[in-house]
Length: 304
Ligand SMILES: Cc1cc2nc3c(=O)[nH]c(=O)nc-3n(C[C@H](O)[C@H](O)[C@H](O)COP(=O)(O)OP(=O)(O)OC[C@H]3O[C@@H](n4cnc5c(N)ncnc54)[C@H](O)[C@@H]3O)c2cc1C
Image 1 (cartoon, protein in one colour):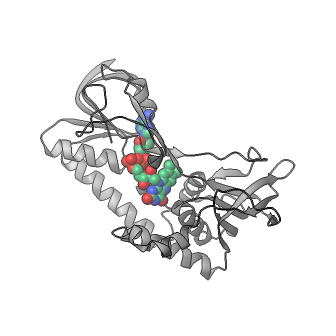
Image 2: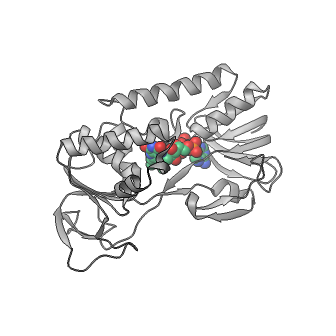
Image 3: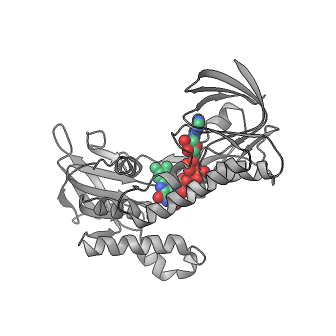
């Protein structure tokens, strides 16, 4: 079955919801498709709903945003996976009503990002997961393990570690590959205007400190060990170029390792449309080339 729609937004995260709301407020007929059971994307869905005061705030913010979008007339369809798109803006989807196609007059892609995996000896052992996976397990009230090691780079690691601790999981250590805290102290202006993020980072650090969880800045994971499951890890101090410094290796006992080395833009749908891509290391990799109106190289297809 193929239906028609004026504007289709793929992705119900903050980007897609804002795009849909804005288009609807300007008189367009908008359908928003999202693969998850509820809109909100990673930002509004990932913190555990239980126990955390800030989870409630985010959930509330996310819910308010999608209710505003619905009130503005956006038709939100959840649990709908878009598995193909074409340069003619024909979308193939699979959802609760089965397989169907939509011909869109205009298409807005807001599919977000996914986590960059890191490979190291032992990384395929059961028990090595990404921090996003840990967050999703917590969201479903499942503790990922009994004794965790969190390793990676960037503020998301800190936040994940704090969520784990608050959920009652023992965190052996948090390894930050870069010099996150000292960089923040050396360049405080980089945080200017990022008050929410700075507050979240500080709160996470305080949570870790209150439970005496070691936060090792400039450290990384060298290997995971275990026969059938993670039983421990070798960690080491890293130099400025992220090379392990010989002689600093340590063994850490753990049954789960959460890694997170940044995000990669999810550009599969824009590639399927034939949109030109460009390499933007600051944004995590390849993203669709866009004009000032956020239109890709394919007319009528936009990306946020
Ligand atoms: C695992 C993970 C955890 C994160 N945690 C945080 C955090 O704690 N704090 C923070 O500031 N940022 C976090 N981020 C970064 C996050 O990408 C941004 O904060 C923000 O969510 C981006 O908004 P967005 O709308 O661009 O994309 P997202 O919020 O990622 O939303 C994209 C939406 O597109 C949908 N989608 C994707 N492909 C399809 C498809 N083919 N068919 C249908 N639907 C599709 C997804 O279901 C999703 O709902 C996280 C990212 C990841 C991957």
